[in-house]
Image 1 (cartoon, rainbow, N blue to C red):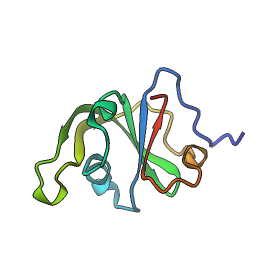
Image 2 (tube, rainbow, N blue to C red):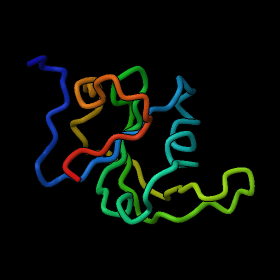
Image 3 (spheres, rainbow, N blue to C red):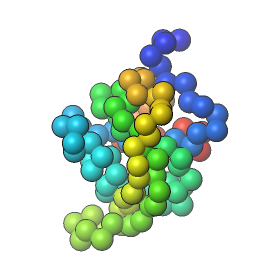
Image 4 (tube, one colour):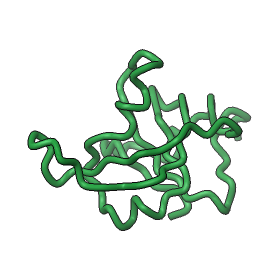
Length: 110
């Protein structure tokens, strides 16, 4: 096992979302919006991980999930959250969890 590979805490309910390479100040907005997910399942997540090129760039603790009000993205979900300043997940590789999946969303321990 690679020491950089993500080893999730068994108590953490994780939702990983792949985002494109973005500037640091835009990462939260890119991570939180317009996901085609089951909102009930998403609300169970204790952590949302922003994934860029298979690596965890940031971790957020979602406070609330809702359906977006943006008419261009009807039926998609977004969350409000806070940055997890005490996480050990930043810099970890999540490639093994995705495999060959094209879906940008992956659930771990959920």
